[in-house]
Image (tube, rainbow, N blue to C red; front, side, top):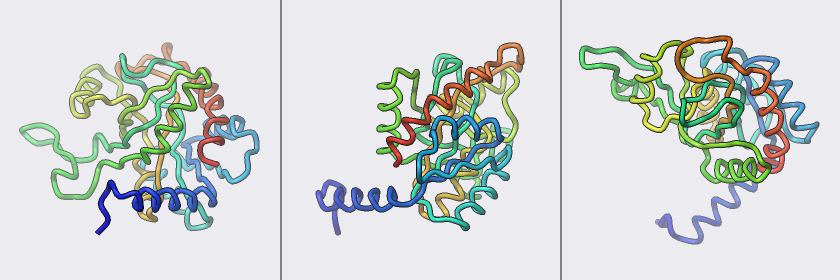
Length: 235
């Protein structure tokens, strides 16, 4: 059996990644405005397919699964705008997920929330491909873009209160952002043994719902600005 420290194991991982790189990259957004921003940033780079699968984890999973069945891909990316946890991700900045976590998939009990994994109903955590995460975050920073890494939460109901924001932050220490599609995309990718990434441009703080504080246009511009780096890292 080959140990993790065996150079042969590292070589196998290198060749696996090279093979994946020779295939296409599927980028999944929720809505057309996000897809258009990503396409604008990619500038017509070859090998990238960008789709808008719909809002929420179910639509994201279904759309991703259909796209994967119809094409040949080596990597899948969930991309779009999202909410940033104060102190972790500022408005207009980018977050590259270290892991994708279904934060509200589970059950309420007298003792508090229990995840679906704790209840024995499947997984709620999907680690992002660490090598690509590091290279993507480094590339974005080198390009002068504000970027952080950390867990990105997938929720079915966008947070709109300080109470919920605090509960999520306590449930997943270090959470950087929340959105509604990442784990749906990840579930479809993992079913085909494909690596997954998630990148979010922050349009609003996670907390009390205040539309006046949203910066959707700024977030979409940040998402577009990430396109050239995505192209370089994932081509």
